[in-house]
Length: 264
Image 1 (cartoon, one colour):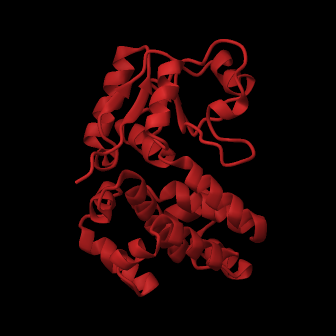
Image 2 (cartoon, rainbow, N blue to C red):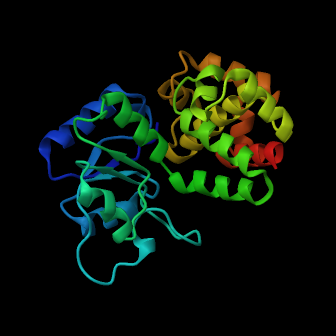
């Protein structure tokens, strides 16, 4: 089995490094990312990111020095230039609230030490941040043709897709009751809430399998499926094809096309 890509880490606090290491070891991300690759500064982090595109980087300090462009760190602003999916792990104060914008950095998640940074929260932030550009491209493509409310529903489903989720939980996140969410999907002419969640789950499994080069069954276990057979059953029931065929058709890219067709 291919070696899992590493999780990139630029954390000066040893306690936070150990906390991230424990979260990966205990969480589903252990099925997808490998060991921690520690960087001493941003120059080393950039070098590691070039070697492992799409690997998230957990950091607690900003790059220093003149000449930094906005495309060097975080999400790209216009084109498909490579970027580092960033998870900022630092105390919440006036400085940390404004620094990412001032530095031209877009982060995928902000974890605050001692404030909700449970192992599960760290694990979920890592899973959501892996190969974030793939998800950004999907959002952008859907946004060209779909109703903005449909894009909002897709974004929420993708946020929830890193673990098991029910339709009532989906509705709460959107700020509706279940019936209201069902009516909204029907009015928009898009798949039902349950189908949206299932599409997002399948897309996420296949996308992370592509990126990590791990079997989709292993990745499915990492995302909360109790057995690979349950994932296969979901895929067959929704797409009338087994996951192996989905993978041959393009995996995550194919699922992005399916979502685009059903929402666009």
